[in-house]
Image (cartoon, rainbow, N blue to C red; front, side, top):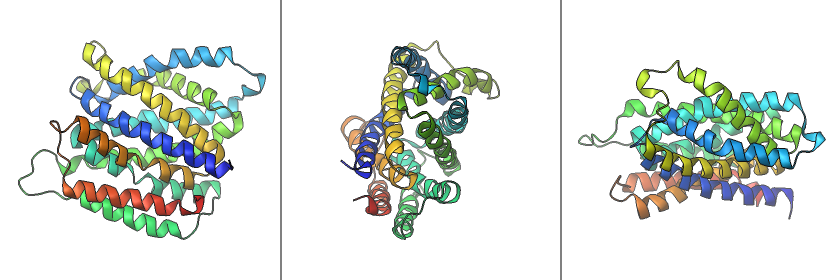
Amino acid sequence: MTDIGLATVYSIATAISTGTFAVIVGRGGNYGNAVTGVLIGLIVTTPPLALLTWALWEPAWWNPAAYLYLTIGWLLGPAVGRVLYFSGIHYLGVARSMPLASTMPLFASIFGIGLLGERPGWSILAGTMMIVLGCICITRKKADDTSWNRKHIWLPIVGVIAFSFSHVFRKLGVEMVDSPLVAITVMNTAGIVFLFPLSRLLPADQRPQLKRRKAWTFYSAAGILNGISVILHFYGLRYGDLTIVTPLSATAPLFSLGVSWLFLRGVERVTVWIFGGTILIVLGGAIITWNAF
């Protein structure tokens, strides 16, 4: 299989695991805030990743410059992006936050072209327009709808921008160290080191709440799924450009909608507008990655 083919397979697998992970986060929001979810996920996944890295260690994996890039990637991703992403799911619901998060191809393309010198085709313009139209659909709000507030829309959007920028550093780091396992281990370790002091800057009700037992149940499962999705994403970046990997990974809303329909029908409603907007965003991502096929 070609490198582009491998990148495609890993990216679609990333979308499946991310879509399922988002639904679990949506349920976990009843028992703990966003920072709690991020921290529990790091606590659960980092020790086994560190042990596996130690057991498989190769001298070529020692690369402080790569570790610096990966740490910056974590600070922009989980420290900013994932906390805002979790918050967006809590305030807006899975069905709205996931499609908004799919605007990542737009920002990833901008960063990929401007910072990494990638040269995708003109199909990105058509795909981007479909993504924008999809976002307009999912943010449409009826006058009598009080279940969510437009003031919270910025949460997943700013989170996506931070995540998109972090992917530049992730790609640089994983290419330098040439090991997705080492990359995610370094990022998770940086997360545990920095998240506690950074969380002290937040309001008291947004700081880690680790004494809630049910939060550990939901967020542990979410952390494991997220760890899998990050590893798959690193493998995708190893073989393909940001402008190919990120849009394909952004098809996660299609899978989250399916899981939401099966398991969250009593929690949140997937409207025709949300479904239609999601389809537009997914199609936009497919058009952006047309050159991959």
